[in-house]
Image (cartoon, rainbow, N blue to C red; front, side, top):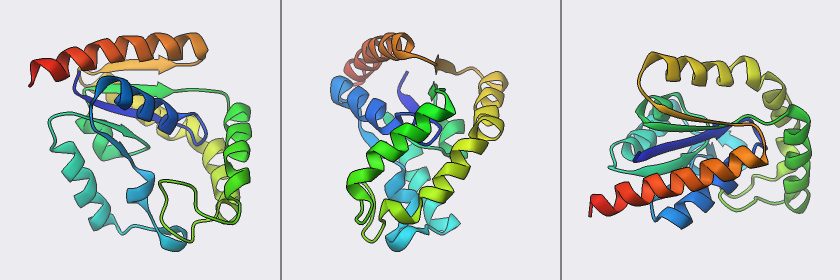
Length: 174
């Protein structure tokens, strides 16, 4: 357990979980929002994104939050935050309020939430049929540890288990 991808729908809590796990375990953390987006909500071109994701994937250990086919394949542990769409929508709205007209932390400049909310609503609605299906396909295709989290109890149990596993792996590599 050295390469952890925390993935799930928009508003599922990926960044919160990933940052907390990294803080507890001492494993380097990377958020994909800063890689995927450029100023003004422009998407990073495919080659630059691939290069940035490869740089992360080549590291010995990492915790990444976001949605990435490349890092999904490189991860030895996947945390799927699989929460109801309505909860995701409520969380996105709540986190967006302070940043309606400015960029939230972890995003480039000129990325106010107001400009992306309609697109995020579409992502939330489509996620179960698209990305969640990819996660289950990847975990069935190769040996990988999957934490499929659907509620608070699962969240806490996964955080504890991952903390122990990552700390042990991190200490043994030093």
